Image (tube, helix red, strand yellow):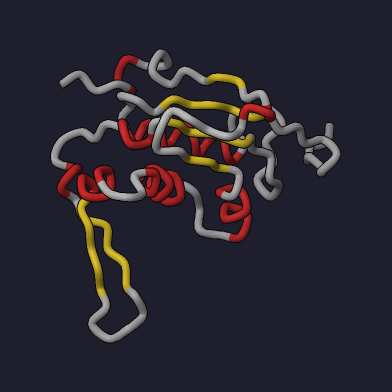
Length: 153
């Protein structure tokens, strides 16, 4: 008996649509990271891009538990004294609320070339509209997977 190793001819990618409204951010990010890597498939091969294409809508309505709205994202501009920061609440209410979801998913993936390639299969939209109707995405209901996926005030 030989171990199965997928080849590019064996890979079958699907398009998945996820509505993030009312879903807890960390739980959403872990499910999306698993789908991007392809770990939900029986033919998972760690060194191949097996994952599906994921579309996330309503990223601005994602829920954060505890005091995580006040946690800060830090980055550096590359200039002396150029450290910058914003809270997650400021990012969700600002110009690009989808970056909170993108950062959460990116940080759930390993830091290598393959994960950067897999991250390019993620599309995040702040509102309910997306331009990916031609791909006929399947809807994945993350809210109904586990009662803990939604936050009850």
